[in-house]
Amino acid sequence: MKKPRGNGPKNIRLKNQLIILDLFRKKEIISAADITNSILISKPTIMKILDELEENKLIKNIGKGESSGEGGRKPNLYTFNAVLKYCVAFHIFPHEIYGAVTDLNQKILKDISIPIDSDQTFRELISTLEGAVVSLMKDLGDIRDVAGVAVGSHGITDSEKGITFISTRFPHWGINAEIKKELTGLLGEDIPVFVDNQIRYQVLSEIPLSDRRQSIVVIEAGDGLVAGIYENGSVKSGKHFLAGEVGHIPLVPDGPVCACGSKGCFEELVQLDRLLDNANRMKEKYPESRLFEKRERVEQVEIIFEAANQGDGLACRLMKDVADWFARGIISIQLIQDPECIIIQGKYAEGGDFFLSSLKDAVRSISPLLKERSLCIQLSSLGKNRGVLGGSLLVANHFLSNYLTCLHVS
Image 1 (cartoon, rainbow, N blue to C red):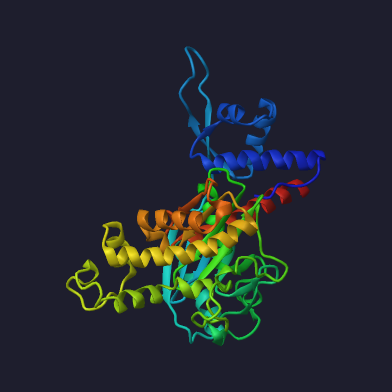
Image 2 (image 1 turned 90 degrees about the horizontal axis):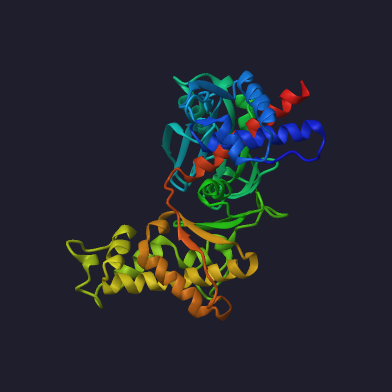
């Protein structure tokens, strides 16, 4: 959560409340002593804040804990009231809309998957999102119980206005698709709606797992390729909302034509379809490859990943080729952004140890500047829920900050 600026009494009090609330969101059960041992705030101040948080239903007293010593008083135990409100988030994939409702601590309570195709119109998108919100909230509460809705859009998106300028995957959305405006009109002004390129929610999903790193880049790679950039507490969008569109860095002047109109773009060179096509073209040269055991063609990249990890010659060659292209793109990111860690999400996150080790080797062999550096490149542990977890976190942070701020104003 963004901390309030200024050092006035109200701001200091609000900052302390947010700090303590963050502790509650990280631990299931906590006592005043736990808080005292974790942060430099006086015990009387902590006790006052606990009373305020409990009074405003942000935390709940769940009884007494065990005494710390012989004859000592049993401490009061508290827990975060994560169901004070609900967060709704959507991730628009190339072939489906995946949505979920979570509590304020990103626990998924219910999810939904809706198939879509590239012919989807903008009106169909808005209607689908509205219906999905209603479906997700059924049996949990009504629309007034929603803290906010986050939509991870597919395309270049103005996060401030909630407009997707253009989506190459969904051309029938048209130019300047006003997702936020239209969805707000249907849900009501009381429900905050957030819209951004889905990768910026995906990078947020890694923050709780990032071991306090201050700068990370998340690369979503599979059907397309895009990056989310997190630095010093915020996600970068850029002046023209193009920050992270690294999939369109041209790596080969006369390479395959990309959807953006350029040639040899990063994302085209590591496309899953290209990997499968390359595998099937090599069948005659590698007739003994386990890729073609009991099958005429390879149609799932997971087969290539598994075979490479098992040492199959063709699979290893294919993955080394992909790792080489990944390395060239990652070197550009590393030299421009210099993050503490680069995390790969999407289908290639399932690539396994062979892909990851080949990628690191390729980076070091191609770039003398990075050869001796300690590179942090990881495969994400998150799955399909990565976008909705980040969107839910954004909604929860916004709600809690505003909720406490309003209490100080009133």
